Image 1 (cartoon, rainbow, N blue to C red):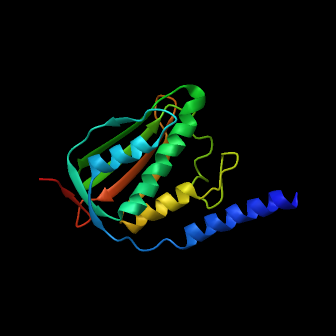
Image 2 (tube, helix red, strand yellow; image 1 turned 45 degrees about the vertical axis):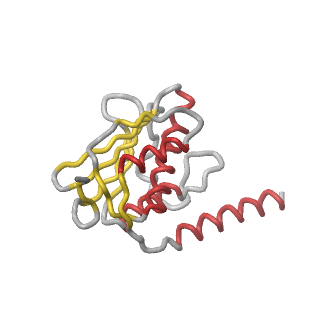
Amino acid sequence: VISSRSEGLSRFLASYTRLAKLPPPRPVAISVSMWVQRAARLETRMPVDVVPGPNIIINADEDQLDQLLINLINNAVDASLPTGGAVRVRWSRASGRFTLVVQDDGPGVPETSNLFVPFFTTKQGGTGIGLVLSRQIAEAHGGTLTLSNRAGTRGAEAKLTLPLTDTVAAED
C-alpha cells in the first residue's frame, strides 16, 4: 500500500509540476503539414488519418505544440481503440483564424464540463492534466482549445484555434 501510494504521489507531483511551470512560448516557424505528419507518425497503436489542409507556417513554440497535438491524438486513439474506430486530423484557415481538428470515432465524452479541470480524469491511471496543459498551451499562443462530442455521429472532436496575426501566416 505504501509503495502504491508513493508511486501515485510521485505521478501527481510530476504532473502538478508540469502544469504549474509552463514556460512562455518561444516561437519558431513551423510548417503545419510537417508538424501534423510528425505527431501522427508517433502514434503506433493505430494509423492516424491526416487530411491535408492549406500550406500554413505558424510561429509558435514547437515543443509546446508537439505536446498539445500528441496529447490530443493520444486521447483520440484511446477513445477509438475499443470501438474499432478511426482518428483524423485536419486543419483549415478561415476568417482570420487557423483551426486544427482532431476527431475520433470513440464513444464520445460522457461529461464535457469537467474536462479542463486540473486532475479530473475519465481514464483509469490518468493524471487529469493532459487537456488542462494543452489548453494552457493554446491560450499562451493566443488561441483556444475545445473538446466536444461530434454532432450527428459518435465520437469526439478537439479543436485548436489560433489567430492569423503575427502568430500564424500563410506559407508562400
